[in-house]
Figure 1 (cartoon, rainbow, N blue to C red):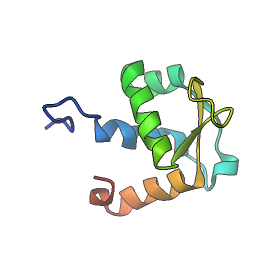
Figure 2: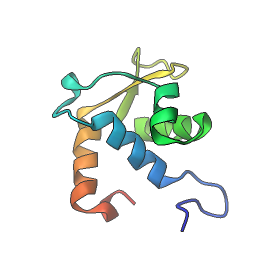
Figure 3: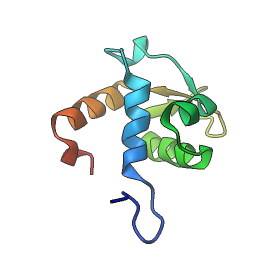
Length: 98
């Protein structure tokens, strides 16, 4: 079953996938590296528009931040400490994210 509704809303799985990739191997945001949207597209196997929509939604929750901060036209993004905490919570209880 697809996480998209019939109205075409964002795929929650894509948001989780983005956070998982951006948080791999890090304990906090200061250890995390920056990701270019094209790299996330390749790693996740989704299209750029889907990844960009996921990043915008995740930014609204303060889970990721564009680099430089506040530049929403940026193609480079960074996970925040809130994002790392959120993805760890998903691992414990996936329903928390939905």
